[in-house]
Image (cartoon, rainbow over all chains, first blue to last red; front, side, top):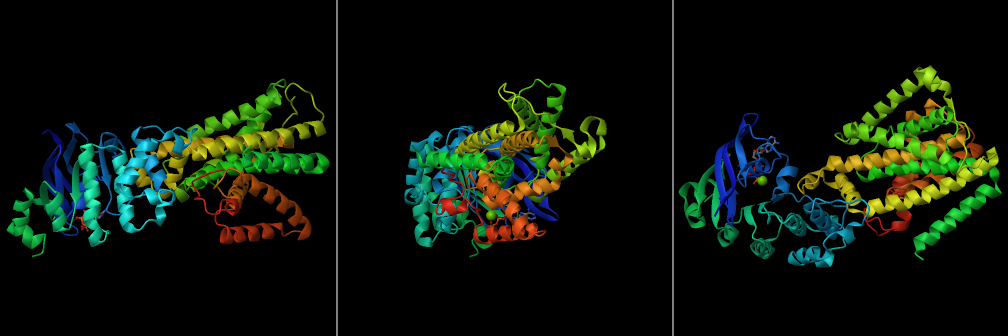
Length: 246
Length: 314
Ligand SMILES: Nc1ncnc2c1ncn2[C@@H]1O[C@H](COP(=O)(O)OP(=O)(O)OP(=O)(O)O)[C@@H](O)[C@H]1O
Ligand SMILES: [Mg+2]
């Protein structure tokens, strides 16, 4: 499998706090990588650097063999790297359906200012994605009406509408109740499987990591402390003590 | 026929009848439509969560263009002058917009204010070209080739203002419901997400900004023609403030809001001045407070009820 994402010597400090410490990382097409780590370990920061929100002090990011260091999120997304957020980022005044319609139009890089959004967007695709994340029943409600769990789903669904090659999800199941977590992941992972999307997801729940990841990377203090097969990384003494708190 | 079409036809007929039944109301009505167009320009920006305290400059640019071209080329038809005046505002909006769309909220608002004050000062200083604080006379041009008397001209302008307003409401409402218009409204709620959809918020806001400049421009050329005079006051910040006031009064949920707000505003100005002499600003202020408190979505909020503000269904 070819390498989709690669970072070399990625370094970033906020004042004296080093949040990315010379990170060398590679991800191949088709992988399901779970990122684990304590609060403040630098997981979100790593995503922010890869997707262009933060510029690294040193190092480089490559996506699909092209150097994307320093590009804006907008340009990186257009190359096929989408993300969802730890705190869902939605258009709260728009309806659930409109959020997806806008994402669909954005993928086609087409925002006509004469024809109505609902007529121009791909109706069938929107319906399918709504069905996929079980939001069909609430499609005409403002996104602001959704509870946290469904906001998370909508956030992921908006990224799915972009038909990305790589989807990075920052804690897709936080804020979702324990009973619903597996259902949510089942849906999301099914969608990724169907569309052949490579994925990185940040996750605190070890059961979910074991069930859905093909590979695990453990973050400690801005660096990758262990990286490999889930059973190996989760059994690592250092990871058990520093990350899982056992 | 769609209910909105019938409503528009009835409203237009009533306003025309009022204008022709009570001739002294013609000019106030024309002014109300001018204010409505400009306030709709502000409304476009409000949908993106932005506010401008300087948009009277676009009305001013257009008004001065009409005055200047009208005296320089006396044969130009009124309709052509309106188009040219509006075009001047569009060009100015494109250039200034490219710069101001980098900023948001208070910075956006104040930058527009600052630029409008620069224009105001220039117009007041360069007497040779601008007539200084006295302004420029706008000669009464032909309309569609017809040479009209003053009362006829005012009547024709009223018809024109109503027709133009209906066209503007229809077109802007289409824009509000389009992909670009809906994405514009997303600037208000989540620019980060727009960026992460691969969409340039600046480009969207620039489009909206040019539209708002065009609307203010159209307003300014009609205003200049109806007054027969353009002065720097047309671009003063107080005028910009009036546009904002009306936009908030009417609400930006639907394009018709600005015009409802403008008619109410003109009405209040006329009658409050008569009722509580010397304190009509008090009445206006109180009205705005009541609106903001009870109808945060403006007067159009009364009609939309359960519809979401960005849905923009007519
Ligand atoms: N913009 C910023 N300025 C200064 N410090 C920041 C900034 N963003 C994050 N940090 C700090 O960097 C560290 C890493 O933050 P990050 O959000 O990457 O952690 P995380 O691993 O995602 O944690 P969590 O599990 O809580 O989401 C934290 O100590 C955080 O306080
Ligand atoms: Mg985080």
